[in-house]
Length: 194
Image 1 (cartoon, rainbow, N blue to C red):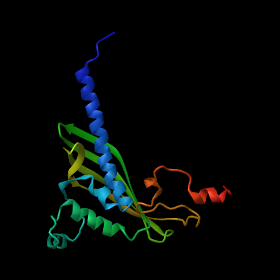
Image 2 (image 1 turned 180 degrees about the horizontal axis):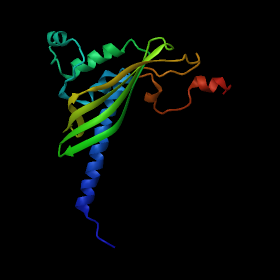
Image 3 (image 1 turned 90 degrees about the vertical axis):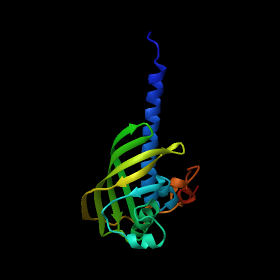
Image 4 (image 1 turned 180 degrees about the vertical axis):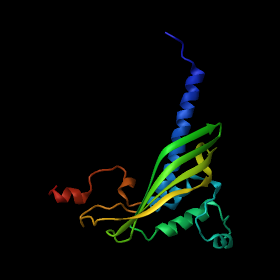
């Protein structure tokens, strides 16, 4: 039986922990947008983070409010305003490439977005892009320091109306994903006379 190389094992554990925390940061951002949870989306970023993409938004208005035009507040607040009118949004992230070098990491993450109109049934916008990020270790967790988002595609597709009794995702903290503990809903029990 060979001896365990504790230093190598510790390095492997550190890498896996860092990788998990980096993916957690990316998920905090996308979940924050989809649940319209500003605080959660902001928690994915360093306080001095920048977000540089070509999508138009009100950089002048951000300066007048005392915000850095490429700062996290400017970008997240702009995105929240853009997404607010829609019934549903989803940001599906995948294909993580993560290069960790000490307390800094560079990532490329593919994202597919779905945006459903306010009254579902007519159209859905599907978009593809990549999050290209530089993350840093900050206060014992990983956060995004700089982000760029090149777009890959954007299409509009028709949809079908779902039955009225369909349970929809909620875009706030009343969504079932926030329930602790998660148990059967009273209305579910009532449907079966329980």
